Amino acid sequence: MFITAKALTNRIITPGFGRILLSAPQIAEQAKPGQFVMLKYWRGIDPFFMRPFSINTVDRAGGTLGILYKVVGQGTEILADLSADAEVEILGPRGNGFPLEDGMTRIAVIGRGVGAAPMRFLAEKARSMGIGVRAYISANSEEHLFDKAAYEGSGCTFTGCTDPNVKVTDFFAEDLKKMKFDAAYVCGSKRLMKAVAELSDEYDFAGYVSLEEHMACGIGACKGCAVRVNTKDGSEAYARVCKEGPVFPVKRIV
Ligand SMILES: Cc1cc2nc3c(=O)[nH]c(=O)nc-3n(C[C@H](O)[C@H](O)[C@H](O)COP(=O)(O)OP(=O)(O)OC[C@H]3O[C@@H](n4cnc5c(N)ncnc54)[C@H](O)[C@@H]3O)c2cc1C
Ligand code: FES
Image (spheres, rainbow, N blue to C red):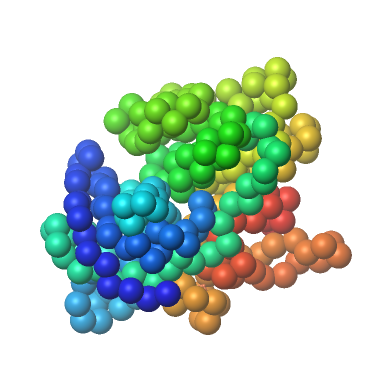
């Protein structure tokens, strides 16, 4: 759906990173972990396209959505200046989202920096279903381990890693020797995605990745976000990250 939402707050967390809280009850009602929204705050045609952002938090009762953003260019620079009460155009929720099943006992959520944005919503949803969650999050520094308190507050086991010489998936690999995981979900780093793909070959768990590609339309029309994937018959094909994704089984990624 396409709506005009009101920004409730826009808080800078640390230079270049912020959180926007939006009043968007219709989208909050429907949103699933792993989905994203296309967002536009600026007027006119420059920048031309809306920009995609993962849904970081959802409060259904309060009708709000939280977005965690990093300033990287023109659109996010404008977003950083957004003031409370500003009107924001939102298209969403978009994409397929992470598969979560009743009966799962333990999952791993893995991500890096702002790329881990969708993992908090996933972890909180899983905890509400009684699923054990271990979060493995890496970042350049402690202050970029953005949702650490929220993971811990919802009862997840949190492992943060800020050492550039250590992959946070090394801690996951250690835990895999000791306990069983039903699934692992990864976002925000190709290096971590590759590690999860390798670990899922060695241990018996379902691995899912959420991809971030450049997007134009965000609705499956322009094919600008296509990536190569493996098909069931062993050949390769293109899939649109905005429509068939952004979440794919890790084994499908070429
Ligand atoms: C499904 C999805 C979910 C996302 N979730 C978040 C999120 O939760 N928080 C967040 O901060 N960002 C997220 N992103 C990335 C975000 O959409 C881009 O950073 C944003 O569109 C950049 O807009 P801009 O106008 O500021 O930068 P631009 O001027 O468009 O680009 C600035 C620089 O960033 C690079 N860039 C732009 N978009 C991407 C991209 N998708 N992948 C890699 N590099 C890119 C460009 O190549 C360029 O070097 C997500 C992207 C996707 C596809
Ligand atoms: S962004 Fe247009 S098809 Fe995905």
